[in-house]
Length: 345
Image: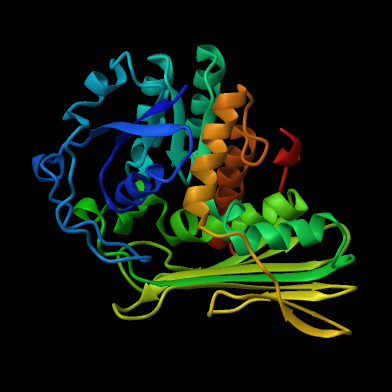
């Protein structure tokens, strides 16, 4: 059976998912929904982002086009709703889609708050439908290979890990919602969560977090550096920033140091392993994290199994981790964590 997919929210990430679903085996994009009549007419010229420019006109022929979410959710032929709306709308529309009997994949972060994330989990359980959160870095080829190197012991015991993600200020969003911290959670919840979530996926919840940051404009915290404290003493830090001016290049990098070898992801996008034999560029799967996460979710539905890579509990734990980091920022001190390990959920 071919899954019938509907996307709600035709901004930058909606465009990205729109283009990616066409490459996913066993799935067919059947419907789109947006309140903007220009986007419903195929004019996506304003959908810029930090990984690509604006799209011109988009051919929507052959798709069912909706202006109202409830109309799309009532479509009896749709199996999946893909939510690429602004963060502050995730919980409301995910719960509505689940209650309408649809499986849901929702863009990261899962929700604006932990309370909203728990509502989404409860709705999925009550509806007996699958809910997956698109934490794409868990699927990004270089990161996935690095995770495999850690989990199989190929690096030996990890003694330190440093992650960095920097971007120009995201002034491209619909009605500039990304620069409203009450709606987006600012740099910490929207950008930095990629690396915070990856830290959780690799090492589980830390005992405590200590964060410092700065705010150079009206959008709230736009630069954060967090240290994650673990019982075994490994040094884990992550930095996220989006205070840079237009024209500054987006980049995501990391350094993992193990007793047997180290891994680096450089700005050129190449994953390198460094050990006593020298330095080698490691092969990674083709495609990007968007393709791999959507293909993974389609496979989960085909097998009628929840995601083992991003179960809802793991995505909710990442939102809770970011909340602890924000508390540390505001209080100026370390904050102890009380998360159970989400990796096995």
